[in-house]
Length: 488
Image (cartoon, rainbow, N blue to C red):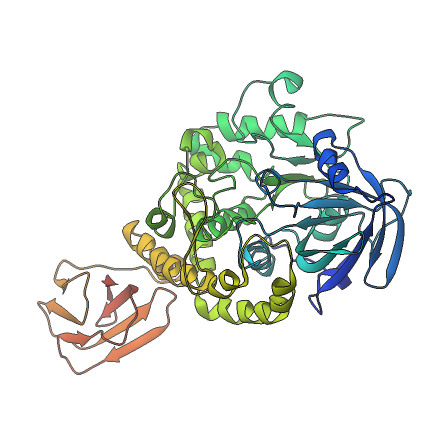
C-alpha cells in the first residue's frame, strides 16, 4: 500500500491553528479597491507592504482571484499574495504564495478547512488551511481562510520532489482524449504551472491516452505504473461523501495532477473544496445531494478516469475498499469535536467581520440547521453537523443498495449465504425475525466495520432493534451464514 503523509516542513508555523493570524496589507495609495478589482481582469500583481502578525515584508505581490467567489456584489474578494513576485527569494515561513479565501456561500467559514483537514488526515494530498483577520490600509476587511498554494514547495512537502510537471485541471480538465496535438487540443483545457520553458505536455497526453484508449480488462496493468490510483480512489471517495461536486466527479475540474519524478507516477491533488458539504448543487436537489450514490458521476462519458475505472473489476473493488475505509470516519463522532473547537476559535472574528456575507445569526445556525439564503428561488446551505449525520446514513444505504459489504471486503473470511435462512421484515424497524429450517444456535449482529453490536445464544428467532440507529448491518447465523439487514 502506498501512503503519503504530509511531513513537517515549510509553513508549519502558519497552518498549526495555534491562533487566528492577523495581516495588515498596505497599498501605497488610498483608492486601492478599484485597483485590486482590476488586478483580477489583468491577472497582474500589485505591489504592497505586508505585516503578518509581527513580521514585516516589503514589495509583496497581491491580486484578486476566484470565479463565483469574485463575481458577487460584496467588497470582500478573495486574493493571492506572492512574496517572491518583486523580491527574488523572499518568502514567508518558507512559502512563496498564500491564498486568502472569503468564505463565499459558507456561513460557517469551515467547509474548506474541515474537508481539507479530513483529506490530509487520511493521507490524501490537499492544501493546508487556517484563518486570518485581514486589514487593508488599516481597515478591517474581515476573516479569511488561508489556503496553501499548490506549487513546488507543496510538491516537495508531499512527494520529496518538485521538478516534474504540475498541471491544473482548469478550465475544463475532464481528461478526455482529444488527440495528440498539445497546443490546439490541450493547452486551452489545462494549465501547466511550472516548467514553462520546456512546455512539454507529452506525459499528460500519454496518461490521458491510457485512461481513454486502454481496454477495461487491462486498464490496471497500464495505468498503475503511471498513476497513483490508490490515493486517487480515496480522494474520489471523499469528494463523494462530502457531496463536493465542484470537483472532477461533478464539474470536471478543480484539481492538480503532479508528475512525481521519484515514483514516475502522476499524483492527484485535491483543490478548491470551499463548496464541500453539498454547496455546489450541480442541478441536484437537496435530497439528491444528501443521498448521492457512491458511484455518482455527473456525466460518466465526460469523466473517463472514474467511469473507466468502474468498468475494471479490480479498480471497482479498490474504490469500494477506499469508500469503506473513509466512511468509518465520516460520522458526527469524528467531525463534531473538530467543528466545535474551530467554532470556539473563530466565532469572535466572525462576529467582528464587517464585510461577511451573512449575519451572525446564520453563523450560529449553520452547524445544526439548513439555511435558505437569498437569491432566485433561495439557495439551501446544509447545516454542517446535520449534513454529516444525514449523509453518513445515506452512505450506509448506498453501500447496501449497491450490494457492497465493507466487512466482506476487509475480512479474510468468505461471506456465505443460505437459502434456508430469511430475515423479515428487511428493511426492519423495531424487531427482526429470523426464519431458519435448522436449529438456531446463535445470532450475532455486526456493524459493517465488523464491530459486534449484539450476540444472542438463546435460540429465539426475534431480535429487538429499537436501540440501533438507521443503517446497514450484518447478521451472522450459527457462525457461518451472513445476511445483510437494513434498519429504517
